[in-house]
Length: 348
Length: 152
Ligand code: SF4
Ligand code: SF4
Ligand code: SF4
Ligand code: FES
Image (cartoon, rainbow over all chains, first blue to last red; front, side, top):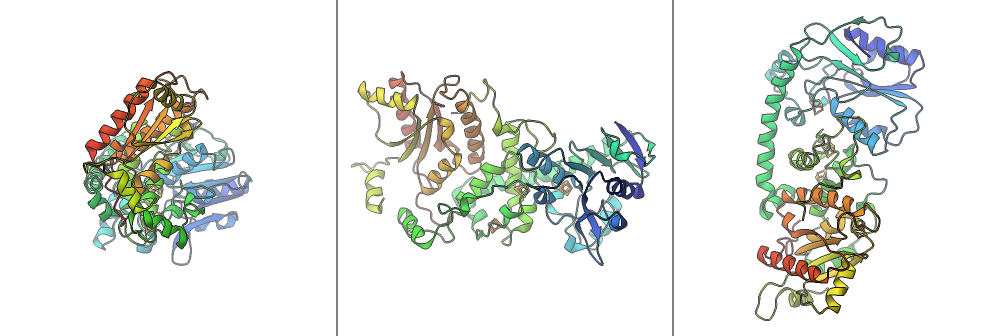
């Protein structure tokens, strides 16, 4: 257990050390290619110098790539929303907790990798500079309220720290041989976080009240969902949607024309592809208590559905009901996997 | 079901709205409660079409969503009283699931069409009352807006 003063180079030394000592077989971390920065799985310690662990980019929630894997031991360096998805998937028995070392750092927000290959955290000054070029944060980041690491093995603090970073861990073993200098979390950090949180919460409130207005009547709900083409990209890119056989791929949910005809009889006509509302409601029910509001679904949607806002409202409601914040802790029971004898008596 | 049949069920002779409600009844309590209501000749509206399940927790929330998006005016889930579930804790789980489901449906204006009730095997009278209450509540709400909407 300890907190250490580190710099950028120390993060790479840490990763290199993990591979060299054979503590892990590989590391999932962002790396620099020729022009781009993207997520990689690195096994060669010699390539650690190409890594860009703090790059403020997000193209998909990489927790998705860790589900049901047979690896012996790996380390991952991920954003807080990815780390939260990993925690949820551990509770859902889709990732083993004993063979994965999770490292996560404060996140000042990310941009779409299409907009550039930046490798340093998006501090205020950096953000201003980008805004000048017409590049803005991903929508999910402007409304993100969990931008510091959840419960993980190693967390790295970058917010409110003047020089370098602070590394905090409960387990010093991965740090052995690095000779890190002890360091304290500066007092100003909390105030800095508070400021960021306030701005983001306000943005979120606006987003949620807008979508709620649209959802509550049939006409406006149709308006929200009408452009969906049931390509299922949102499901594919969601780290939480993990069923091996999705209902919508079974004969019952993946209707052939003759079955559509049968369904059409009920209402006189059937929209093709069918079951748009049913599909979204089902995903709401299955994902709400674990959704980490990463925005991967909306970014994968070719039809620009406001999925992030929808999830902010729905997941927010369900998690508030159970006083649960998805993925923040590693060992809390999932809301829908447990119960209390006296609770929810008002549900009728 | 053909369109013609559907019309018959939706409106009575006077042209009033007759809701079509789906009821999932737990085998060990509510279904027996329904039986007792019948044997005791308690009167209740005929609007609830019942499906027997082995426990309220057997009801997959997707079934409720499917019913609602296909146009059912309401869905009732009835099980054993908390503490009396034949499988000890099934209905506690049901309660959490339905609570979550109703929370979600609040956003879609559909939450008031889902009912969770506890009716034991000895509560024939309560069964009749529940069915009456649910039917009246749905009559008040009017037909499920998705009944005729095929755009979605
Ligand atoms: S959603 Fe939050 S944690 Fe995820 S990338 Fe954006 S700011 Fe970072
Ligand atoms: S539903 Fe969307 S926002 Fe929520 S976890 Fe899945 S991809 Fe992320
Ligand atoms: S990604 Fe968009 S269009 Fe595709 S199924 Fe999801 S909401 Fe519909
Ligand atoms: S057996 Fe009746 S609710 Fe579980």
